[in-house]
Length: 335
Image 1 (cartoon, rainbow, N blue to C red):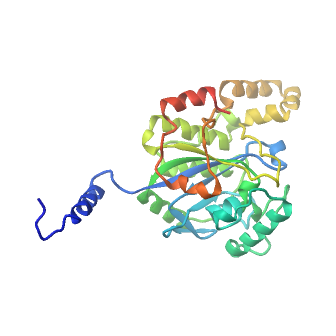
Image 2 (cartoon, one colour):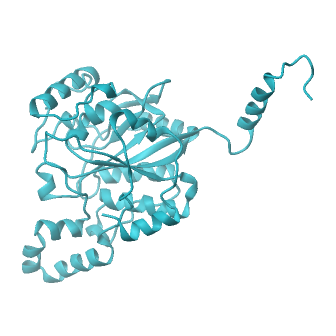
Image 3 (tube, rainbow, N blue to C red):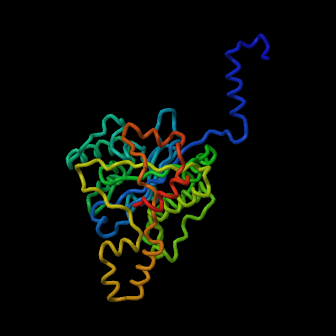
């Protein structure tokens, strides 16, 4: 029994404190791999799409410097882009990154070109003024800072959420803030998926960069997502769960599903001239596609997140993707 000097109401508090001190009871944070559909001209030339990483407990002190989030903040999205002021990576708060607004209630149900432009301009002035003045806004062909705001107006996005620890997040912040942030972008060797793979390698004891001979030796967004799903099946402690963030209609045609390199060549028809000029190479791409180039992902039952429901990305997982049901989903109902 507790001494009479302690009121009964104190007992639950002491028990909760004791539970927090038990091994394995450290506060869990959340991160998510964002698989973003192909949009614009690239959707027809190279439908591999884009990839970024979201962190629930990491925020942006600026687009190029990270910090721990304060209470009530929703976290940050970090990714590698080509040709934005020579930076290797840039960070944006979650809501501006997705919708170019800071309040979920301000997200429009439908948009047009003028509305997206105005929302992006306003978000640029609130979050991106530290970028050099000569960074263009960008358009369908030439991309610029518009890649950092309003992504959900351009693409459908799937989020593969997994657990992290506070110690890992702190170490990641220190690592990113201390290293050189200068771009060496290469579509073949150092693209957005290479960056996402590096982040996953930092958090998870697995090699997410081995791609030869599939995907022509490239690291692609869909393959990294597939590797994460496969890793989670044998490591259920990361509590992987899939979500869908729908594309807001009205501005662009619906984005195309992310494809592997071999699937991209077949879908775009590039495999035909390759077959004429190098038939053995074409046969290799077709064989890769048939054997493993489709990289099935369990997304048929992904929970759809409305703007006001994005907090689900930071809450404890319900049913991990690596469950038996998800194994069946991956083999029979994946896109």
